Image 1 (spheres, rainbow, N blue to C red):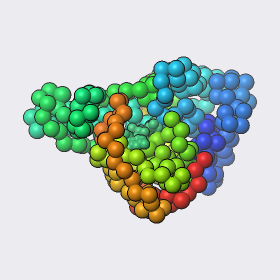
Image 2: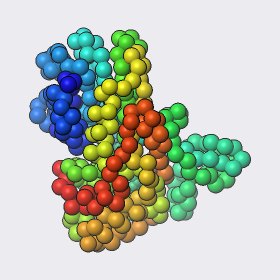
Image 3: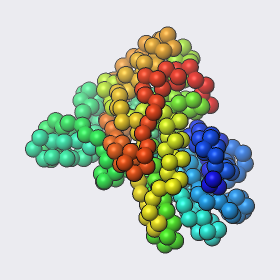
Length: 329
Ligand code: UD1
C-alpha cells in the first residue's frame, strides 16, 4: 500500500484517479481548491505531505484560456503552484511525483514530407484557413505532408498559455528531481473524455462542448472541415495510467509518457458518434477556425505500453456510447 496525496482530487481527472487508487488498495489524501485547500498554501502542504510516499499532481487551471488577461492566473496556479508543491515535497522528504502533463506541449503533430523527412510545421496562417486550406504543409518546400504518430522524443512547441505552463511544470519537476534525487513521471494526456467532464465553458475541450450542445438540443458545431485528428482517451484509462506510474521511473530524472488510446479519430467522427448515440441533432460542419488550434495530433502509445505497462482498455465506440449520456460536472 502506498500513501498518495492527489492534488486536484475533486476535479474531472483527479476524482477518477482517487477512485482508481482506492480500488488499488492505496491510502489516498486529497487536496482541492473546491474544498478550500489551495496548493499554493504551504500551511496546507505542511499538514498533508508528511508521511506521503507519492504526490499525484492533477490540480491545474486547464483549457485554452480566453485572452491575455488569463496569463497571470495560468502562471500562478500551474507554475507557481507546482513550484510551491515541489519545495514542500523536498522539505518533507516526499521523493516521488506523478505529474499530469499534456500533449499540448508538442504543438502541431508530427508529419513526414516526401523530400524532407520528419517535419514540424509552424502555426497555420489565417489566410490559408479562411480559404478552407487546413492541412499543414512542409515548412521547407510547401508540399503536402503525411501525418505520423508523435512520440516522446519529439521537440516541444507550446503554443498557448496553458501549454507553456504545462511544459514549465515538466521543467520545474525535472530540476527538482535532479537536485533532490526524486523520481518524476510526467503523463502527457491526449484528449481526455468521460463521465464528470466539466460542461461547456470557454476552457472546455471539444468533447465536453459537443456533449453539452447535444444535451441542450443543439447540433455540435464542427470547426474546419471536421478532419482534425485527435486521440480521445477515456478518463478511467487515464486514471489507470496514474496508478501504473506510482512505481515507475528512475531516481533523479523525469520520464515522460504519452497517455493515449492509440486509436485516433477525427473531430467530425466524434461529433457524429455522440449525436447518433443521443439521437441527434446531427452535427454541422461550419468551416470556422480558431487561430492557434493545431490541425492533427496523434500519439504513439508505445513507450507507455513498454515501460508503464499501460494500454487503454476502453475503445472509442464503447467510451463515446457511455459519454453520450454520462453525467457532466
Ligand atoms: C485539448 C485541450 C487541451 C488539452 C488537450 C489534451 C482545451 C481547450 N484544449 O486540446 O487543454 O491539454 O486537449 O487533453 O481544453 N472544435 C470544434 N468545435 C468546437 C470546439 C473545438 O470543432 O466547438 C475543434 C477545434 O477546432 C480543434 C478540436 O476540436 O480542431 C479540438 O479542440 P480542443 O478540444 O479545444 O483542443 P485540443 O487542441 O484538442
